[in-house]
Every structure is written in structure tokens, then in C-alpha cells.
Image (cartoon, rainbow, N blue to C red; front, side, top):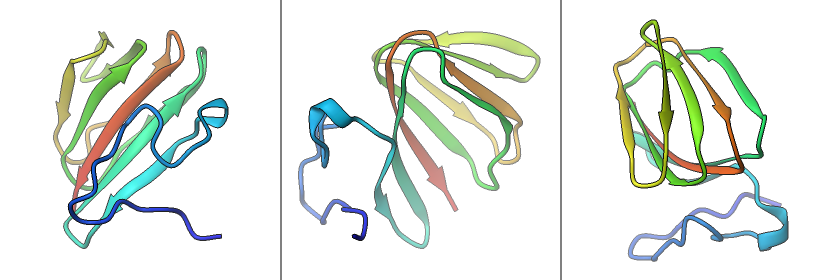
Length: 107
């Protein structure tokens, strides 16, 4: 089955969209030739190891708390906070508690 993507004009609830709330998972919400929006669900303790992305990105914390290590520093991102990274910036993310992040990638 193909992944569900949001349609233009559709409102997306980042906490529950497209899922049974008992089965939260990472999911691409929107993808165009110029950008992609991904809802990342990270259970407590889950880590995305060091990596980089070609384009600039933002990480917006919707729920929970995560540690982001980048540019030689460790920072914690919490609900309502946003982190911007330049292209090719190496970073890792680890959930301190169950966390939902909105990742925006610009191509």
C-alpha cells in the first residue's frame, strides 16, 4: 500500500495524522520536487545516528523532548522549539522521551 500524503489544502494533525494512535510511526507527509515534510516519531531512547542532508533542514518539536548533537554541541529540543541546519551539517537525534518532530527538507 502506498504511503498516504497530505493533499493541498488538507489540515494535518501532526500528533495523529494518518495513523492509528496506538501505532505512531515516522511518515512522509508532503513531498514535492523542492521540499519534503516528514513527521518523525522517535520512541524514548531511539537514536538517529550521525548523518547529513543535502539541503537545509528544520526540526520542529511537536511533542516530547530530544537531544540533537550538531556543530560540536548537544542541545535539547522541546515542544514549540525549532532548529535550523545548513546543508551537509552532520547531526544526530536521540529521543529523551517519546517524541514527534516535524522535519522539513528543502531540495
